[in-house]
Length: 183
Image (tube, rainbow, N blue to C red; front, top):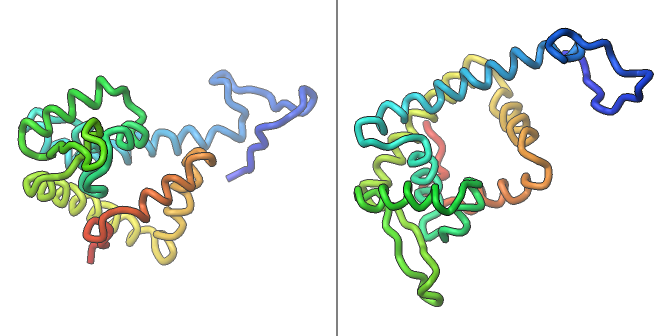
């Protein structure tokens, strides 16, 4: 794939195609579409389990992070998901009402809300992790040796540079049982 230099002077600016892209940028459109299809299928397995419960992808994301970080503060979850307090409130209320997540007051600050997965929530989160881990493992196997490391480097590089260190810390702080890799 050709390197694309995003900083060009007016005299170096490439000719543009009708779609607004420089000719050498065109292959990136295919990668963008592949991202859409890969994401569709990656979340499709959990979507099928969530639909009968009346839950959606936001419920999946909340449950995933609460399961990975038992006792996390609501404010930390808002920072991770980058959604509004109102959006999180609705999803969290449904997960609590249905017995997947428990919300407790903080020990030192009773105003603080700490989130814990229930046994039911842990079981559902493990089911999602198993399904998605299987999909990833099969894809990596198909890509050959070194694919896991290359995929990890690529995904980290896709994260905004100023957020990478915090994302890596978050992953390292995950609950030990949640970090276990599939066989």
